[in-house]
Image: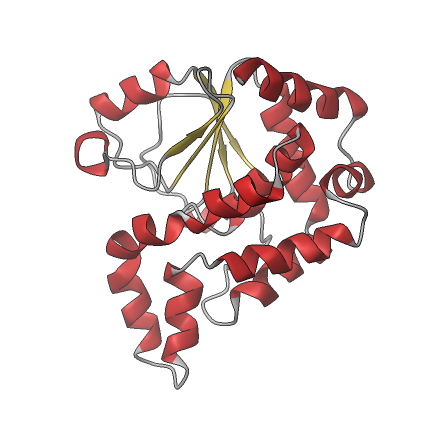
Length: 219
């Protein structure tokens, strides 16, 4: 679909009426891609990137920027360590992003650069709080790797070429193994699950209720 739409790693959540859409960075979106988002009833875009990652060209929709890392995105490390750090240190930003999903009048589009890591955590928290199963969340997360690899391969190879641990770097930038999301879910479970995690980091009861309503209407 990316060839026609200019969007990669695109998935909608909720059928027949999507309430959540996830993608990679949409700067190359075409008119066809804009029509796809319109058909999915997207009313707001949540950009999880840092300010210095955001190029000039953006989607023709209201955009809310919530920098998830709060610093330069990691170029090295493990997926598990990155996810755990975000969950432990950036919970307020994660909850803020999920709150925007809840407040959206239609579907919310969530993206970062590849649409698998930052996006993966926000989508996982939103879906779990809305009542979706952990298995569905893990399967959705795992689908990103095949979509991301052809788009981000050259970038990952450039970073890996300067490292002694190229395999770890390639996994960080290109893969979305179920084990990494299992690890993230285990961290979230320390709070008692996604709903309690989000409550602890500032989401409101009205927003939690809105997520459940969105998911139930989409079913």
